Length: 284
Image 1: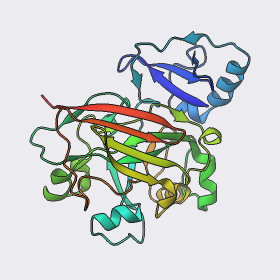
Image 2: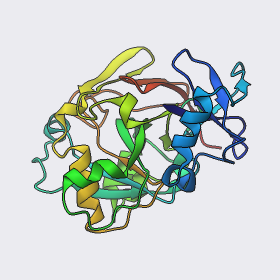
Image 3: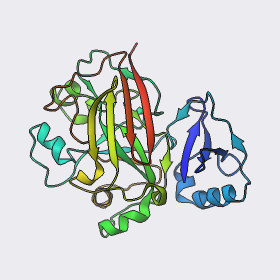
Image 4: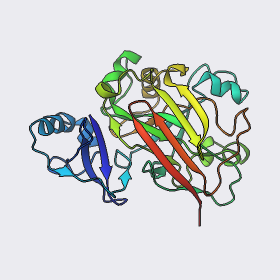
């Protein structure tokens, strides 16, 4: 299944997207696509209601697409999780996952405007596979137990300001938590439709120029390992989002691509998860 949320920020309507692209209103079943919906019987009820023709249709024409999950409790990120990205930043592959957090209010829709922060000289992009948690993950016994905790997958752009991240002291969070710095979506794709999370091609371009072209198969630590690992240090709640790292090709890397500026257009796609297209503007 593919879940999405459409409408103005803060007033999105939950929907289910069928295989033929028809959208169905989930409002009769839930007020939103959030932790309680994902952790409960919501996905099964949605599937059954759609199959029975009990959900009204929604015309998506002209409607904004919001993030596919309501504001998460936390956004947990994995840094340097692709060998080629670690190499392009002259960093040895980590022995354990490198973890940092993003403010949950960075999450915006896949096509929403991304703001270049005041004083920024190094705003960067990162195509990433996002995992949305669907069941509490706490001290999981092994990576094999992680699959049962996954509600689905989405596209994430882990937008970063590299000077804030690396040259302003402290944790990476400074360069990761600026407003609008996490476009998410367009869909939350359930595991049965997404397929193997370690076999998804991922691509990003800026103003039509290809920048990143990789595969989730190149992760150092796979999705299930990351969830298991995180559960040893924090409780992952339904609705939480995990950004699992980015392949080579970022502006901060060895390719010397230019950083993002107002007016730039970033386009992203991951196999079976859809596409994003967002434009950069200067923060007022």
